[in-house]
Length: 422
Image (cartoon, rainbow, N blue to C red; front, side, top):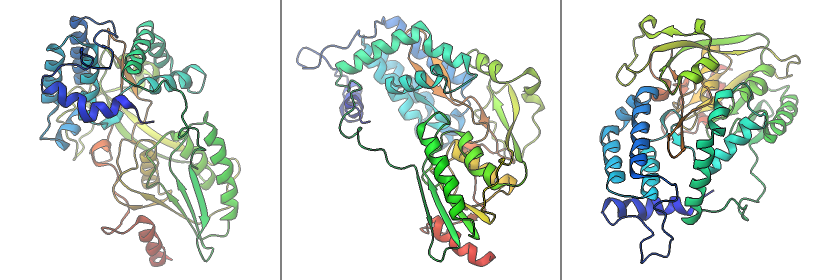
């Protein structure tokens, strides 16, 4: 959904603020004043922003990756600029714009992003209605009175700013596009399935895709090859690929293990304690020597864990028994990246295409950073996954087994490879 306030933020608000013209909502503006809709004092705004910066520093391990990718726009300069913006105003609108813009400029490394009201409601539905189990601390943060009150006030601010009120409009009411597309390529020897995301088990599209894939595996029973196209898949749930792709198509248990780093900060500790037993946590000093481990930016790491991806064969094996090819590219991220790692390290499938986007090792629900006064939440990935050589999964992703030449679609590369290994 496109939001009016986001368009203004990008096109007008921040340039105006940085130029010193103050917050919207002055006497000549038709927009009502939003200076105090969050109910914050100037001291509370600065306290929240300083808490954001401090907590990212001791809890979030992707800042080094981010700064190496953006040397012309270092995070320290971003933090300084937006703190000064807050300090020079007495406005909740400016405060929220500064927090939002800070995270926008930092980028989405390690799933870093502000939890906007529509996302907050989706998280509440997922965690509160039983969709996501065994995540008590996640639920505690979402239902904390400070969070609840903060998002009520934030919605009021955004409504005053021209934000849509959540009413479904005509564009949103259209039938959603299919997540999965299947066909048999001419000649009947190759089955092709394109999957654009990995819905969670509690989503309706999961059951729809499961039925479609079961049917397609029967159609492709006599094929020599199966192509799984993930080039537009940016992730979702690991359960999807484990249960709907890997389990039906293997005759034996498969697993692979990598390391993931953790920072046991005050923010992260409750999440770590809920997910890992003490025996699973290893001191960072015991991490083996890894040739491509970049230590700059991960000084806050205190522990590492072994992150294992495992799949048991389904009770009923799919009738397809040929070769499997998985098409990947830079959009492959998070849960789809974890599938790419699994395919390559277990030999389940041959990866074809271009390097992936990464962040699929140690995949875990993003954790929350709660700003203490406003209640606004920021999310990020707590686990910092390492490839087998020690390089960052977020930074380098996965290099396919077969790289596509520049400008050549991964599908074409895979079809040519089939002829070469037939």
